[in-house]
Image (cartoon, rainbow, N blue to C red; front, side, top):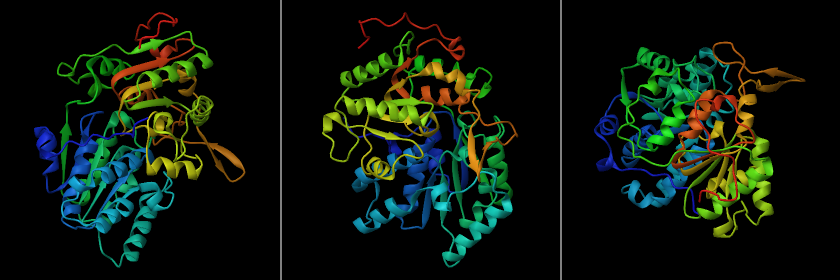
Length: 413
């Protein structure tokens, strides 16, 4: 199967709003919905000081997005890095693009401003007191206010991309991430706010379906979809048991060998179930997998050796949880086992604290669940042209959408 492809428009292919954000010399917070180009602008902004041999850092939250960006920079190095030599390019890819949480040293969401300031100053001291020229945060809403309250300790300039509707980690109150991040940044240094309004990823039908999950989000509901390309309606397939859903996934893969395919699920064990099923049917996630039978997968506690293979060469189909799919896009998205979605919305997340398991909390003090409705909004907006939602029975959160007839042998591909 093909390598995962991240499309990176260059300057002349950007919209006026994207170009304004790209060429802004100040600290900036770029906000907008899925497919609006936040990550595209962030990468292009990052490459400007890189080509001028400045000391900068680009941080992501999701390691899957990190892998795709590293893969893009490696694949397109000759056209993206200007006159930098191979050693300098390798240094940028290996050391200047990082997962913030891992770079920090396993950051905890409950760290307060004082703790983060102390740790940032220690990192600065280890650099001999030399600040970065600029640091870039993609998917900034997944970090915490304490990070942005101290970012200028590390750098003279800070650039972020964020979206309230993609606040899946609960580190900010609903609909407040952008305002809070912006207020925190501009309190420390002059910072501008730039909105990217258009969606360049989804068809009209897919986006209309996706925003049905978040009817109370006025920013999402007010987006104009008239300029989106027309496409096929999402396929909502009910009446499938787990084995039939697995078979459906395989048939979609076999019928779309040249497309980026994302398979999105709620839980890590569902990732491994699909992985094992594909392996039983001749597919492999190993480094030496045959091109026509390869795939990749990710969840946060996966075996390190398999994660390294994914980082070295990210393949599709790509199996991943909703938590880890942000920043990615696929030609085709499959959302199987969707009858579990209703339960995931009410199942608290727990983490081990010594000998006990404690329920994780959101920024507003509520219990953190395995999923929010925003997870499914984000998942559906990963699809560029085709979306399949597979389930045994129709969960209540799909009441806004009329499903197609139960599946039969005449598959729609």
